[in-house]
Length: 385
Image (tube, rainbow, N blue to C red):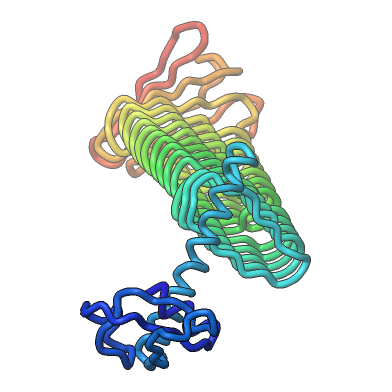
C-alpha cells in the first residue's frame, strides 16, 4: 500500500526489478515485482515498467487518508487531556454553535447564541451562555444553561441551573435542578422552580420548591414540597410534608402526611394518620382516621372518614362545619370552657355555640358518628346522634 501511495501522490515513473514474486497490489497493471526503485539515468541497464494506479486503489487511498485524519483528531484530544489536567475544553463563539463530543471529563463553554450541545459522556461541565439552547448529555453533568428558553436533558447525579427564561429540564435521580419552568427528575432529587408558574415532577425522597407563582408540584413517597406564594396544585404520595404557602391552594396526599396549607381558601385531601393545618381562609379539608386537623380562622368544611381523629378549634376560628362518616372525632376546644357551650341538636346535626361569641361548630354525625368536646381544664361534653 505504501508503494501505491507514493506513486499516486508523486505521479512518477517507477523502475521494477524482476524477481519472480506476485504483484504487491492486484489493482496495479504489473504482473511481477518485489523490489521497487525510482528510474534514473544512474541505472541505465535496469528494466523499466510504467505503473498506473487503478480506480480501486485510489478509493483505498482516500479511505486511508480519512481514517488517518480521524486518528490525528483523537490523538490531539488525548494530548489535550495529558497536558490540560483532568478535563479538556471546547469553546464556541458567540454564535449559533453545534458541539458534539464523546469523551468523559469535558468542559464546554459555548457563548451567547442558540446552541445545540450533545455529549455522550459523563462528568461534563457545560456553560451554554445566553440564548435558546438545547443540551443533551448521556451521563451526569454540571450544566449552566444561562438566559433564554432552554431544553436540558441529563442523567442522574447532575446539577442543572436553567437560568432566566422558560426552561424545560429533565434529569434522573440524585440531581439538583434550579430555575426551570418545567422540571422532571427521579428520586432523591432537589428541585427549585423559582419565580413563575412552574411544573415540577419528581419521584420519592425528593425536595421541591415552587417559589412564587401558580405552581404544580408532584412527587411520590417521602417528599418535601413547598408551593410558595401563589395558587398552587400539590400532589404527593405517603409520608409527604407539604407547605403550600399563601394563596388558594389544592393539596392531595396519601396517608401519614403533614400539610400546612397557609393563608387562602384551600382544598386539602389526605388519608389516614395525617396532620393538617389549613391556615386562615375558608377551607375544605378531607382526612382519614387517626388524623389531626386545625382549621384556623375562617369558615371551614372538614370531612373525616374513620375513627379517632382530632379537630382543633380555637376562639375566633369562625363557623366550621364538620362531617364524620361512621367514626368518632374529638374537638379540642381552646379559649372557651364547658360553661361557655350551648349545644342544640336537630335532624342528625349538632350545633355548638359559644356564649359572647359569633363562633360556632356544626357537627354532622349522620346515623353512626360521635364526637367529644374537650376543654383545657380536662372537662368534656359527649355528643351522639
